[in-house]
Image (cartoon, rainbow, N blue to C red; front, side, top):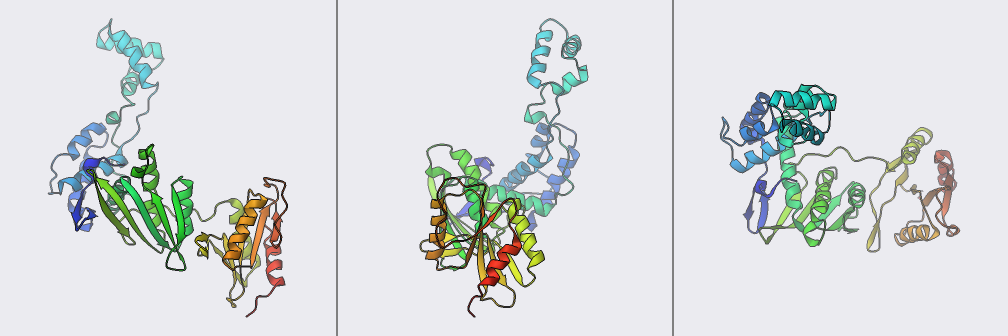
Length: 386
């Protein structure tokens, strides 16, 4: 998370407007790249000092500091220490109390079983400023630095939020899953759109403890949102003791995260591939749109739809760990959504209680691999009305 001094933003009608970098900043960003290349092999503290100075091309001071901060994080190499630096310092400083410099290095090297050059290289290898500059990564372009800097700024602002609201359409499940995996305090409700979801999240400043850790976890949500069809984020951000509204939406110039994992498990991935091989007349849709069930949303694993008859469609859930109460709650949610054509593929090895299966469930048991042909047999046995 970037420090507060790098939060370049303005207030317009009570709303926070981030000072995002853009294409017109490329000329002075090129100067940053050139300086980083010139400093290759030198200590990181020397590069930091140089990038804080005026460049050959005039640059907005706050934006220059932001871009320099992000660039520095990408060009710093970890120093390799032959021996832990703290151990090297103890041996060297003990010898230096009695001997001249060169003799002290020789004695320390002998005691540690390394060369005098290794003693020199390992002495302060654990200090960030002593790491070496490796130069600009070959795959880092001016455009990608712009997007990375913008993302760092937006994440830092979000890390100072008291409340966050996100409305997403398309790929909502990936966002909800990410929020839950990161342990965010989150409620999910249907949006005004049938295929959308609204996430209400607590911001770090609404908590009493672990606000920094929580803020970092919340910030990781931003690059995932770009994989949604559309999103709109609003947050109440606290700066200098006052609360301001931050708005971000589809098209914001932010760095894109790697594509979210398509499957939660190898079982899901194999099932998807197997259906594609044996069911040429059917299309298996991974993570279809969420289904409204009263005040809540249900996120099916798959939708199985006939390619020529859209009225023939089923939902398929792959269930890992389970109890009778868990399955009853899941089935009740689908009934509330008035969806009856549901197949539960249940791992028979992961039962967590002795309860029986709830009645009325279409169940296909599996071990390690779901039988795609058996799923099709269930589907073909009951032809939906046209």
